[in-house]
Length: 340
Image (tube, rainbow, N blue to C red; front, side, top):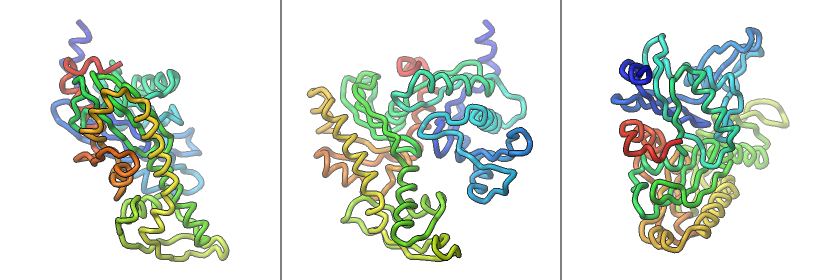
């Protein structure tokens, strides 16, 4: 009775809790929030939260000694429990546009194959943020729903979700993951690879935000693709003074080659473990790329050549997971079997 009463006065929400960004969908309202998963805390005031989201991201690499800007999610799981709980509470309140925290039902996505301890941490952080019930869905399943794949049918669908901290690769049929693999190699590792490449080649140290901009503007994975060049600025490791260099799309492709190859090998591994009947479906229908990493120019071409099956980038690839958890939230009866 009380659960039904709470439901009448609450707004259920769905969250894509990502390493790079957190996106919030409110029932009957759609996507209402998309902000970086970054929190700035005060070191001198018992880790008091100073800023969250866009404001906190602007502080990355620029804070004084008394303030620390951190990412509480690392490689798809919670690295700092208290800060993650504070971040969730902030985003839930902002999504509801009121100070009083309504006790809502929450559907939240998690990487496939995370441990029971990591799952419990996500659930407890969400409960600590004030929701009355937490329902979990695996990210590749949510991404497949958001990409419009027939996840409940007896047909094979393959999804590759490249986020900030993890890459989820899964073959789905009849509402379940038939075979899958989760890599802790994704967008953040690409940024690190660019940082290390620039350091080795030019003795210049650049920051995470600069590396991310390089990846987004001229990043590519296939030699047939030309993405131009751009100027970037960093600190000369020999002289210690700021210096500018020009980096080309070919340079970025070389920097990302090892990371892309890890994804290709993982994709092959999943295909090798896929039952023959589903393999026939995949050969006909191909695989679908979603997530921020799916927008890396030429990645679909590389996967098509290396696996021999069609590869396409989904529409709204960046929003596939939050769209998926939103669809599930709007029709819980239909998709109840996907949740746990």
